Image (cartoon, rainbow, N blue to C red; front, top):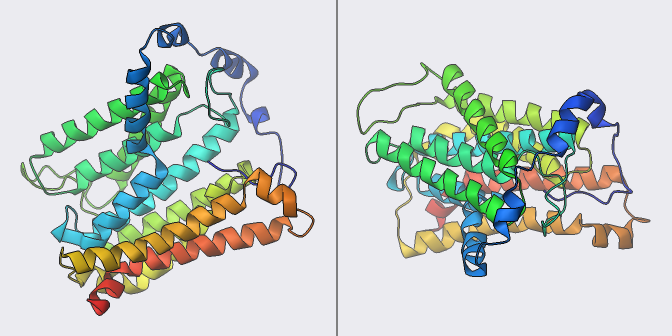
Length: 331
């Protein structure tokens, strides 16, 4: 997750005071000897897992969600369910950022990544996305979907340890958080887990459920701002979640009914829409980097940065959610 320049703070307090010192002491030495094992792994294996780890990258996950949403049932998911996964993933990012800053534990000393390491954000995001997709889609038998999701989760979790950016404890904690979030959603959405048949979806969110999930994501992102005020991800997420709730509540049924054929023209037009949304998000992340803000911090104040990030998140949400309508009109 990308942070705003450390010299620019919106709200601030010592989050680690909320965690027992004894717990922090145990977690600070959470390695179980995996670093010694990693030194013996061939570089070619590490290189392969550096590629596989992108299956859990936030950018990859949001791109896949956007594509599933664009094509709706003609892809793998009813559009309403794809929107539901988008809202869950925003909530997962808020939880990830909040927990990372709450514990404030470093990554392994061999890590090429900076920032906090516990729990693993890739493990949380991967568990939530692939787990939710397995529960919500109606393709293949449900046990095959769950097995596929489990396989991807294990691969991504293992990759985070093998490439040296997380301890084993980090990824196990991340998977546990993701499973807990999915379990909570299953217990609260509609009639819960529905074993209606081998090929059926196991969870069936309604239009209202999707709106509510965006609302929950907005609450979580706002809460994370209190813990991690310098994290650009939660500011973008706040804009996406709040706008997503409003847009889906008013236009969700209309968007859900639009048919977008899987043709080259539709792929190009829809891809342009999604790219515009992602470009806005990525540009904001780049603009918030330490180097950029350090150069212009005399002209930028924290409120401006926060407002810009939230507005950009809102714009991205509008573009992604309206992409079926835009694509259908043009083609």
